[in-house]
Length: 227
Image (tube, rainbow, N blue to C red; front, side):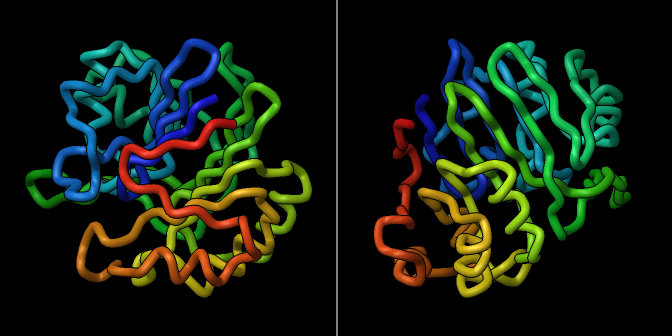
């Protein structure tokens, strides 16, 4: 399994002959190496409905006939936008797909989309994502604060690779993310959701230095880990 990071919270997983993209925020993302016209996901997984996570989902899904997985509210909204293939889930639920198993976990944040005419559409609760395939477990925390039940997530689902936001301001900052890493007891942890905008400017290496030796790894956009 190949897992690559593409700036902000964009993660791509290649497994079982499928390409899965989590939170495909590409247009307007100055930290990514991706171009919308080059991305061809079989599956898109969304953690929540903010614009920097929903991103280019509608265009990508229509162009590539992608399956989009998200909360029931997000799935309904995307259906209204003409996305034909969605799979609605909710927090605590899991589903076994032919490419792997997806489970949604709690995330303490918000979820909504601002329209061009300045309306806010509520898109349900935010979530984190556990993705399980080839005997490995990946955890994408989405946007969240640290919370003590992360211990339970790590105990129930031993994590091979975790992606944690460190930007502060909108999510947990480096210190809280380091505590989250300990709660989760992940074998490897990659920081995400930082430096895209001025309010979330951070030094990811300082975060890595807060973790046990060998646990943290900073990935530049386009770099990957083989599991």
